[in-house]
Length: 269
Image: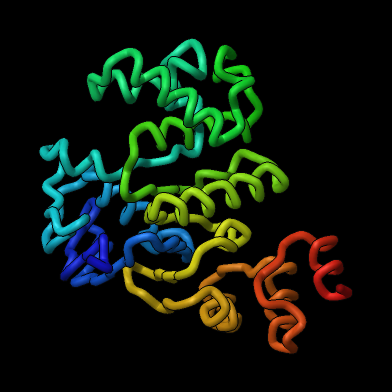
């Protein structure tokens, strides 16, 4: 099945405010879809609907399974939300215990849990953090621990709602690269909501919402080239993305680059 998320004729109102009216969206398996738009566009509400937080009319399917809010545990095994604030997610005293917690809930035997935790730590290069408290780590390290817990959960769809807001650009870039590599390796589908377009550079599909309706959608280069429409919506294109688009137009770059030094090296090689 090529499409893992199917939303058909979605109707949803929040406090008498109609957010979605016969909204339709499909998302391909293994893709990275970025959902952007101004405040009040319905971005975060859409993710909350996917997490089963609200009742709705219409149809939402994940892997051909209909979402019935708050009732289907099998459904939620398919989806994992990476938090904006990892401290709200942590419940264990050490990183090792944090990763193991998901596996313990799955009632895996102790030996298998230990082997899985070690394997995930090696894959993410965080073996040196296993005995540390997750609360004492840097912002970027905390997010990587959340990613480790996500791998233990083994979801098919990963949701991100302004997940990387609290970390600096260098750490953010490393985490985006890590997530993109994991997505391709494990065929994970990522759906991210953000107001910061710097976070969408690894996406292969962008959906622009305004008042619950799709205004633009398509490949990043195609959508981001619509600067006039994005500006009208109040979606600001960062300078480096705008510059990348112009350089790509002249065949000087083949992808969006946010690091000026890397951009210069690519142009002058």
